[in-house]
Image (cartoon, rainbow, N blue to C red):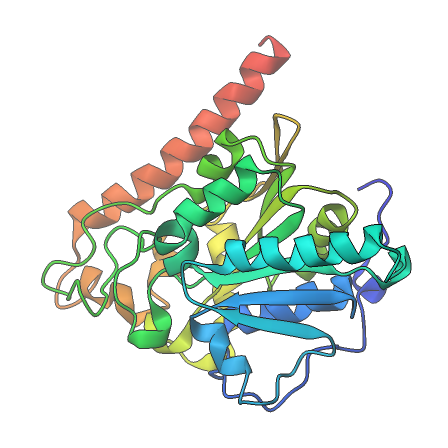
Length: 313
């Protein structure tokens, strides 16, 4: 990648800004992503945190952030970010703070807010051209209240509201495409277990202005059903099987920053989590397994066809 500070793993930050000892679950993939994002953005960042799992970062009156943190209701974080950004801009205009004292405004939400409850406020913020980064930690369910189904829950998964006898019948909402359709400045997907890719995308987003979205897959030991020590490997398997494409969108151009080759079968990923155990025991559910594999195959086939078409093949 050109013009990046992060060419190798040794270039990644070695000192973490986010404090330890929070009430978050061990092995939380969302926490791993937030920690890495914060390291790249730096201390001059204000996090506007919608109600959700990351609320557990704060135990009043303390937070693990070096800088500022604001708590909002689940659907209101973009509105809170607007207020913070407006206040900063007014103080800049009045000369009350210098440009060096300005802050990067970051909305921090789970998929329950990003895909559903907060989507209206988010759409309005994009329409206004709000200068902010929207970071969604996507653990594919309402994790803070027991892993109920969200609009980000994947097909065939068992949740608290879709038990093993039925599981999630629908398909995960394509939040990446919804954001891109609204013509923001930047949209990208990341996962903490691919730290170089994540750092490069945060570096790119930090250098831009306007609405910017980062969607981080957040493997969830308690909600997905796996040992905390497996979190990083499950994140890598999501990329290697093609279930979680690493990509970015800017100025109408879509780029995949990792293309899995060879791409592993999706069941290599599904077998690692209890939420998919019913697809294998007491007997294999060949129909649902084939449906999940087909949806991934279709995605990558469409990407390859689009590339071939652009080359004039």
